[in-house]
Image 1 (tube, rainbow, N blue to C red):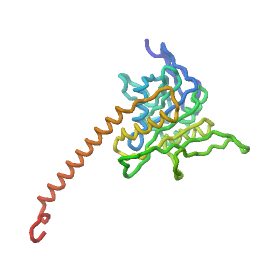
Image 2 (cartoon, one colour):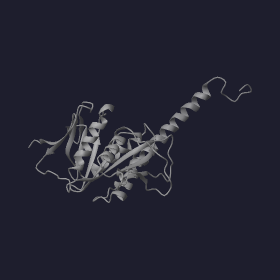
Image 3 (tube, rainbow, N blue to C red):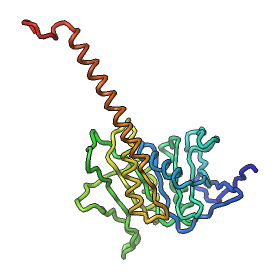
Image 4 (cartoon, rainbow, N blue to C red):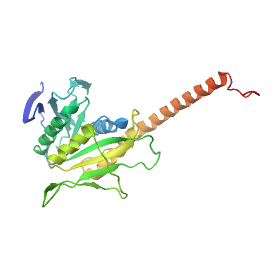
Length: 270
């Protein structure tokens, strides 16, 4: 039976959240939403894709917007919209994933639509997993930054403050792009949110960083599933070996070139 689409009726400007009705429709119930987008080390995208696979989640909807670059993605054996929502069978956890660029001028519209939909459809908290661009990363002891909104009210109305859950102080940070836009939309719509950030190198896939973020998500979210990250860590070790072999190969080529170039030998005039 073909999937039937139903409009969620939540529309902000030119953005619409559409649900996919199947024989087994999932309804969210006090759920946590976990979001990840392409960024340094691809840790956000890798994290949410791994969670979807390990928790055996199913797509329940997608975001349709004039602000999303037109296109489709072929994944899971079928063509899909690039900006999708997944959920587990119990409806206690869902994942937001985007595989296409969002036009800068429309980020606010798109993400406000997502957060408004989430708030009124059983999502209690939104957690964003993201990489922080770094010139290098430590081989040991790499830990994520955990930044959250307290969602408290005071005499001056709604006041959201960023709190650091790490023992040591965290310097002020500015989170931009789709991740920052989603967090800003959470603050504007008064829904609790948390950012998990891990230092990572731009342009190099970082499955180890994704594994660290997922482990921290398991700890903080108190979610109904526990994601085993051993497979991701194995991929990280394999990637390290491949990168080291590449570095060794480049070094050998450079050494061979130096030996054959004039004036680089060990003779009396060198």
